[in-house]
Length: 388
Image (cartoon, rainbow, N blue to C red; front, side):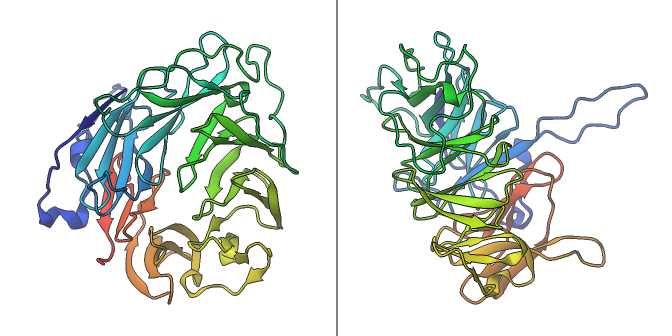
């Protein structure tokens, strides 16, 4: 793994309103000749956004992007598009699984190829900063069986049965690959398709295509719990409350949402009739479908808050929880869908624009001023919505 610091490259102010990061994409191809076959370019995909800690320099936050199957991750200023850091993922990384970015922009979690000796599944965590002089890397991975986690009510002890070639816990973990801060190794990590850090960075969730999600104390190498799908399908999202106290794995086809205690893995509450949701900034509610607000931990439906009236969903909140980017219900006379930036306290609209959605992730910058998402042509656009 190679991390390369990149000096800021300032862009003229006149291009900011329609910034599309053209430097990161290839030019539009010429018209194809008769009988010619074209292979489409690898589109840029937004990995995540982060509010940089004291080590960072991006005031508006960070946006991590890469080609869909690329090993080159670029961390950009989420407002100006300036490249702040670059990370080149090691060859052990499975590029078909999207990396996860920690809330402070310090860590990337990636799915790795199975251990070459034990064939156990692996997940690695690496720093987005260049190695510090004199820093000593650990010499080996921590086996998942070294510190078994508790088995709470509503959670499975280890996930579905695994093939014999992938034991639940390797007896002899291999050496830590170069560049990694930590590598988790366990049979239950084979088939990882989704990763997410808790906001405080102490926990790492891994969703599996076999229909379960695992919660890890990644620094200690300890599995906290494994949650099996009630629908029998794979997880689509791994949600944490902003205060990092609750974990909500969202499985496809589920009709109720279970909330688990992050430190212990214990089942805290079950929300019937809530198939999916997003936590409110104060961690005291869950925003469900059809603009519903479910209070926690009671699980009661509360009146729709002003910032959700007339919306069909939430794209994201600013880091301080004062702004929210929402999808307006329906389309206009030209068939266009609109996004609105609203004030959480009052529901007042601060800015609006038509949505260009190409199927890839989109987000609100941590400072609550800029939309980040696909431009419909394989690139990423950063579009200012409303200044602070």
